[in-house]
Amino acid sequence: MCVITSEPDPQRTSEDAAIDGGSMSRTEPVTTEGGSGTPVVVLRGITKRFPGVVANKDIALTVERGTVHAIVGENGAGKSTLMKILYGVQQPDEGTIVIEGKELTLRTPSDAIAAGIGMVFQHFQLADNFTVLENVVLGAEKLHGIGDRARRKISEISDAYGLGVRPDALVADLGVGARQRIEILKVLYRGARIIILDEPTAVLVPQEVDELFGNLRELKSEGLTVMFISHKLDEVLKVADAITVIRRGTTVAEVLPEGVTARDLAQLMVGSELPSPSTEESTVTDRPVLRIESTTVADPLGGRDVLTDIDLTIHAGEIVGIAGVEGNGQAELVEVIMGMREPASGQIVLGDIDTSDWHTREIREAGIGYIPEDRQRHALLLEAPLWENVILGHQTDPVNLTGPGNTLIDAAAAKRETQEIVDLYDVRTPSINVTSGSLSGGNQQKLIIGREMRRNPRVLVAAHPTRGVDVGAQAAIWDHIKAARRDGLGVLLISADLEELVGLSDTIRVILRGRLSGDFDPDTVTKEELGAAMTGAADVQPRSDEPDAVEPDAVARDALDAPSSHPSRREAPPASPTERSQP
Image 1 (cartoon, rainbow, N blue to C red):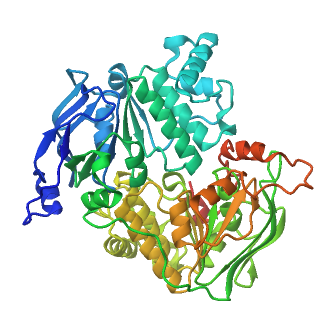
Image 2 (image 1 turned 120 degrees about the vertical axis):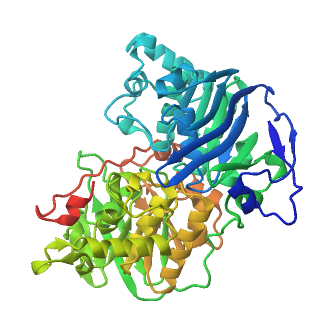
Image 3 (image 1 turned 30 degrees about the vertical axis):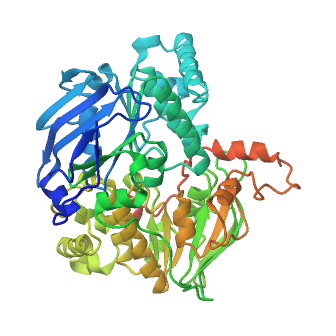
């Protein structure tokens, strides 16, 4: 493999190199520490074109056996396309793929699996109503059957790599960290020797990230190779043995982590410094824009309340951050605000109006913007063009209506607005007529942010607004939120990125088992303190007078293994266009 050293031409910028695909500096062959020096993946001249865009251009990549090789780049740089080519989901227009010394043509994922390649996608491919065993053997029944032999094999792999997976556990009862370990086990079960991980830490808290990195070290020590796509540059530097930077579809640098900083990587990726979420002086007013008062949400299956006695106030010009391990009530908090769940008690007050029994359409029309945590499931119609997606949730806005009695969608107006969003929010697309599913994750997110911000909402409910986006898109999203805050927007910010919470928020609360903590001051709290509170290892624990109070260690285990949410949505009026738009 190669490392790029720092001898740039003073007359030539990194962007020049990115555009023409040339070398930024001289290269020297090196061997990564801990690696065998034996190339296990060699990609040469990989080029992939789509209508209106070149996703990959003359990509060159070499990965050594027994290493963790990170691939970084901004959204739309071509990382995911390259990995899909390696996994057989897409085929290159040009170039060669060499796996363990053999040149291969990978036409399907089955070809890749047969070659010893496995991929864990950012959006997990698990059936919630199946057990771990049933999910793992699905599609691989011929390997070890579907019974005791398969159960023993799963336990054997889990023990060998420290994954801590229970074969008979129901996936619906498991937290996001456990689900990710199941996905890793799935590819190992199929014999993968090369594992591709797409944004593996996007939904993990610091403790889970440390556990994942421990798992990766176990894999590496057994001679397996991990290819690691991430936007979190500090984590890349912590776990990777080598790093390849992709920009505008081509490789611009291949570096060793000990020779670069996060700032250096950001410069290579986007040509600018690493962004900071830090806000300016306080803009918080004394005017409440959203109040949640003594609100409890019952479990529709009859278990413990999913939210208990929630009290929360958001003022104009204030960002209130919510930290917590996924599955502890964040999703339900969003849903009760947005009218997708009925509170068992308490009230939601927007301005001075009780909206507790309003439907989602009415709440949206009253001025609450909404950025869902899962953009592909809850924010976009992936097969619809961008201009149709911009209408979603705003079908009753007069600007989108035309015809007798405003009964028709004004497509021309929607297209004009979409083009304005594309220009203002730097959504990189060849046309507003392409489907939203053809955009990279970061560009999908910028389209959603633009759609919500263009309506000048009074309150913005933002769930993981920068999840899975690169540092450039992240900085743009932060800037838009900060600008709206200065203009008096109240923001409920739910995020698994503790740096983002600390940097953007005026106040931080921790949610654990459906209860909110007291206030944390972002100016003084540390990520470690928040992480401890999120797992119940600090002061955020059930009150001792609760009949089901448990020991702090048990609370921590519950929090980290908490199931992800399964929304129980309330029926909306049959003719509601907004409800129809929500997948």
